[in-house]
Image (cartoon, rainbow, N blue to C red):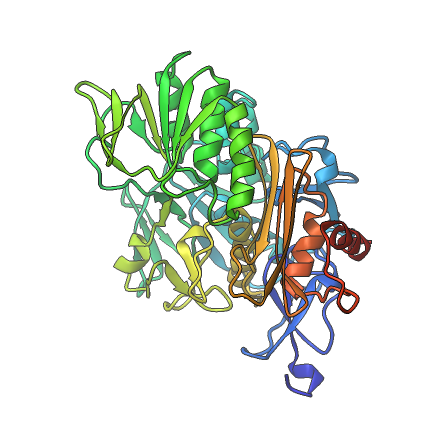
Length: 506
């Protein structure tokens, strides 16, 4: 690192915001994280001005990343249902004061969390900006994470929207619902909608998200088969569902398991088809996956591992799922949860550089002038996050940039605090031991599981199933590579590591 203090770069480990200066800021202007959550990095991009004011007092849900503003945390997270003790105070500062500068026309394509966060940040950064949010769905922009809770009957329609309709008017954000952006005219700085409307912009943010990946197997178009990605999908599934119906969820990831749990709560007989040898292989090692499997079984959900779907069969509608080994599983309803693919068509057709996603730089700018991308559609540093919390942070940073407050995104190391079927899960850093030099400390106790990985004495990975109260401390330890202060020749135990993490959290 350069010895010149003014050349130092500090990256927020929570949201990826980049700060330039001799010291980290007192708190992150994007997510409100404390200065201790910043890590020094090598200088890679020119210094940039940052927001000078702090966000209002906010509380972050450690499970899903939802931000609540108020004197205290909510009794229950409106997104994932986590209790109030799963919230942490991320700052306690005054409300931001929007800049009084030149009016700039900001058009945002996409009504998901990245698009809404971009609109929020653009308005907070500029009182005079003309902001238009183009949302493809007819519903008010909503919490996509809440769809499985909606499917389970835990919440109603009123709990889905991110903001009430009046909020958009109060914040002078033009919301176009049910509007499809069909093309971008880079030369004319305009977005063309499906009805022929042209929206001129000074800055454009592409935040059009992703779509469900449907594998190329026969029968996916049959009535009774489909994905769960939108409110319309959830309502279609509810309309088809009957108590006692045999249902199959193809895919044993987070969405597949949460969907299976929702269907089981509605009285369905559910089977999950997992292509690998255990559940959540990206987040959990096999031992942790087996512990989770027991919770899944206790919820009345069957799981078939190493299952490869060959076809969905039926005449008038779904009747069964046939696997490659010849197994036939009866089903009146099939939910396909095999991942998502970014919606890059709009950017590609406009001549914007696209790889797996729409390629962006540190300011989330694309290859086209005055056009940014954020959320599931954006590829930063070769990474597609495809997660709610990074999409929210990227949206905020893109919105600040579009409003004229130059801000950088430095990437976010992967760490997930989740709740699957009511079971707390945490996974951060290394999941599988990279080599023989990695030290593993693990224990299964009281129906739960915890495991730590150390490399060269530093925490490289952590997994919790059940009790996740040390998730925040483990996240920081993994992200910063904290050195475990073990006595020479004395191997760590789960209890000594937990005690150390608890002290670090204090």
